[in-house]
Length: 262
Length: 319
Image (cartoon, rainbow over all chains, first blue to last red; front, side, top):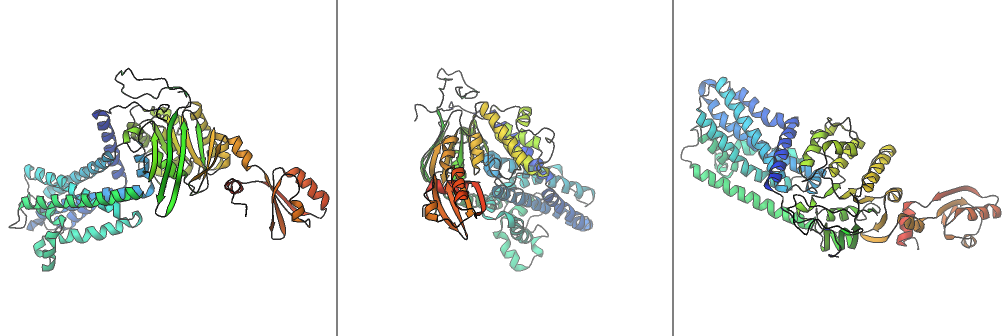
């Protein structure tokens, strides 16, 4: 067999080739997200709308300053869960993922493009919230704080991308949005995305530190000097790092098991 | 690109060993004794298949026969439980082994918010030596709808777009999984034309279908597959010969035992008040029937359909 078989020349595809694929993939992923109104309107629209409702009306008591970082967290977490988790679950169910896998494009670029798309959305959300905060919400921030917040939000997309991967593997596509909301909404409430955790019922306050979203919120609020007193930023990063490993590990185990069965 | 052409590596660094002229009928892909199970269902059972350069092979079989599983194995989308899959001398699980391969799969939906032009642009970027976008559009007959969002296309246009994506990399080897399923007659004929044109251009093509007619029209070799096993293999003419024959149904008082003695009759069955006769040639049988039974009614003659063909080929009709 080997003697009369056609073989392609073994060769190395250069970095340029992969960089070009990644650039195209990321660009079209962003376009796709933007044009999918159900996604773009809810992921960008929700924090913006809630800021206009609660941030602008509370301009005198400084609540707007709290809501800019907390709603930024809401933006990045929902972008990851819906933009990555839901999108992959759907594309898997529809068979589109297989068409992509049958091409020479490496899987990691597919995932990377989705992460880039979500990061872009997160930056847009931070930008819009800061803009609204400064113009309408009576918020005063330094450019450095905005930069720090953006950094936290983009870095924060990593653990929630990992969580989104697990969601994509576990959640059936047709009930996806419902299940994701069921996880995401209580989590965002209990983590202080909507109001400072100190105003939450005591039992929720006990649960909050067990949630990854809480630690992201603390890191984001920390850039504006609004974190819970006594919290350690390093500790929050460590917990998010651990959470990332946990999610990736679980996703990996499930994925390899599915691969073996497929 | 002819069957004797080289499968060039891209970005060759002038290695003396390449390019090597590849003689005709060399193996470009094969499955060797492959077994694949899904839970308790055996999708493929020690199944072997060989694709040679320049040929069009049709995998013909009913739903659930294992056709798609064979394609998925060759594309590296799944791994066999036992046996080997090789494509262009490589393990198909390696993503960079797929640079000379195109695939059209049966899928329910594609991201709908991208335009046809954008899908093509994206897929072209996956391949080191893509066809030009204009060429892809021309081959898949997408002129005039390049700027439509995928979600706004008709069924036939969607199918053609998927076909276009399979062509983006200028593949030497094409996998077409039921390329005409769900198409109307006109679109189906157009798709056949396109597949023929690709074959004429020297591409090696594996297509799956459950239409005997389609396999007959397009393939240089047909493999009939059922329940994960190869039933028979040969040129379309050879397959047609094996499944040819007519099905004669009529209401008659003639004795079934006597009917069985008529020339070329292979089988006689009671079907409520009528009898169903399987015969190689209908004319002599019918002539005899009408002569012997002037009161014969309800005469119907049909070609043996694929259903009968499979029954005949798998020998399940012998009760």
